[in-house]
Image (cartoon, rainbow, N blue to C red; front, side, top):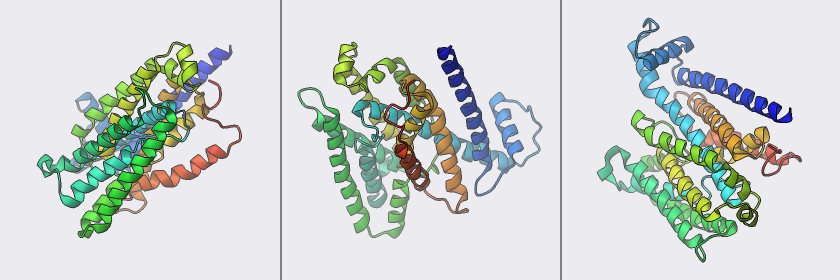
Length: 353
C-alpha cells in the first residue's frame, strides 16, 4: 500500500508539474517588452505543430513572427537550459558527494567566461562569424575541464576532495584572467557586452542552436535513469558502491565527460546562469527523496519552470531593457537555498524515497 501511495504521489506530482510547465510556456511567449494575447499565442503554436490552419488566422503576421521566431525558441532554450543545468547539478553532486556542488564546480564557467571575454574584447575567433563568442566560450569550458581532469587524477583515479579543490583553484585562476582583461579593456561597449554575457542571457536563442543541447539533454537524462542504482550507491561512498558491484571508475569518468561537455554547450549559448544547478536538485530531493531516477525527472520539470519564469522576469522587470537572467536566478536562488539549509530536517539526499 505504501509503495502504491508513493507511485500515485509521484504520478500526481509529475502531472501537476507538466501542467505548470505548459502554462509557463504559454505565459513566457505571451509576456515581454510587448505583451501578446494568450489565446492567439496558443492558436499560433497549435497551427504550427499540426501544420494546418486548425484556428483561423485573425492575428497580425508580425505577432506570428514574434511567437515562432523570437519567443518560442527563447522559451525552449530556457527549458533546455533549466533542465540541463539541473541534470548536471545532480551528476556533480553524486560525483563529489557534496551537496554544494553545481555544474560549474570544475571551473567550467570561469573557463567559458575567459574564452568569451577574449572573443568579445579582442575580436578573436572572428573566423567563426556570429558564433565566435559561443565557440570561444565552449573551447574555454572544455579547456578548464581537461585541466581539472588531468590535475585531479592520481594513480589513475581521483578523490572527490581532490576534484573539488582542483576545480576551485582553476576557477580562481581563470576568473582572475577574465577580470584582468575586462579591467584593462579600452572599449566600454565591449566591456558592457562582456559583463552582460558573464551574467547570462537567452537573447541569442535560435532554432538551430537548440538541436545539440536538446540531444545531449536526452543523453544525460537516459544516463541518469539507466545508471540510477550506481548513482544512488555513490552517495554511500566509494567503498560501499564497489561492494554493491558498481564500476565507479566508469561511472565517475562518464559523469565528468557528460557534465563537462553539456555544461560547456549550455554556457556557450546562454552565458553563466547561477544557482539553477544547485537548488533544483535539492528541491527535487525534498519532493521525492534521493532516488536518482525520480530526482532527475522532477528536476527536469522544476528546472524548466524555474528558468522560464526567471527569463520572463528578466524581460519585464525593466522593460524595454532586459536584465541579465543570471541576476534574477541569483536573486531568487540565494534566499531560497538559505531557507533549504536552515531547515533542520533537510540533509543531502532529502527524505527517504
